[in-house]
Image (cartoon, one colour):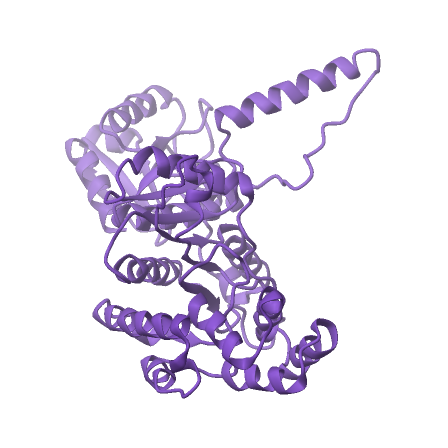
Amino acid sequence: MQRLGPWSREAWTVLALHLLRSSRSPNTGGLFFHCVQGGLVQSSAREFAEARMKTQLELNKEKSSFVIKTPKGTRDLSPQQMAIREKILNAVINCFKCHGAKGIDTPVFELKDFDIAGQFDPMIPDAECLKIIHEILSTLQLGDFLIKVNDRRVVDGMFAVCGVPDNKFRFICASVDKLGKMSWKDVRQEMTGKIGLTPDVADQIGDYIQQCGGVSLVEQLLQDPKLSQNKQALEGLKDLKLLFEYLTLFGIAEKISFDLSLARGLDYYTGVIYEAVLLQSPTQQGEEALGVGSVAAGGRYDGLVGMFDPKGRKVPCVGLSIGVERIFSIVEQRMEVGPLIRATKKIQTTETQVLVATAQKNFLRERMKLIAELWDAGIRAEMLYKKNPSFLTQLHYCEETGIPLVAIIGEQELKDGVIKLRSVASRKEVDIKREDIVTEIQRRMSES
């Protein structure tokens, strides 16, 4: 299973520039998230597509035909896929905004990122980042999950007391990170055979990295005769103890595991690191497991932003990344293979709340009057673009697109001064006074 990879240099450059613009004083800070708007065409993407099309046309102007191909690394999404993806994106962005984030747009990246920049008291913003991951994964209901935490100071201190040479730290980090998908035997073989550690050093590392737990493990390691003598490790462990205190106050400590095998071998991490994983496959029993790796990750990177500042100003940062594409792949595969999912209601591919329909002929003008009233009231409504569509066709359209309500008007309804409101799911119909139809639709939408 694949883990979340590092951000590209371009991603960090964009983030650094935004942070430097907003961090004029070392005592100021800010919250930021940047995102890709799924399959929505942004201006830069549209300009690129138009330029590409123009070039293609010029290259093929003397040919009888040409083929339009999807660019490598991209794919087209169906309306149903787009609806699912948009719901995921909305859940992530809404959570970010609930925590006071400001948006910055970096449309070349496929992650949803949340970052807190500035000088703050220890572990308060770090705890909030973990709370955000917990909220998002709980909202998306992907199944049971666990958030693993560690600290790079603990990792480096552990390697030091075990006798790992300084020039092998990063290589050992990469090996330790594989423990979730490889056995300790195989990881140990890589350390001793490929990297060149002595068996004794590898075994000392193994004694540590095969441990995981909660705050009790942190307290235990604070008394460890070797780790407690290492300044880096001691600082990291003290901060982790404080972090667990805050996580308990946030009510999420039971979903957090202090995991010494979490190393995240990226040089820019300087403190707490974390990674969220699904504990079980979201498929039904007996079906093939879906392997998508971690779905969120992050950590503290206090020295990175200063690398992009000519004056070398230090801007402490902590952040997280949500793997939107990996989450989307889980939901998408679940829909393809899960029999219980196939049996549930269709995914709504539009945001339409009501279809204006009729069961009789020659009611186009009345449908147009009614839909205009709904539009003017801010209700998302549609009608079929035919003078006399069959009633069955109109109902099938609602079922296919997931439109929840049908506002039906006919001779009897016109005579009685009512609109018949039909629930597509239950097929129940009730007569609503014409002057109350807007209020009734709004009430039902607020309750759904």
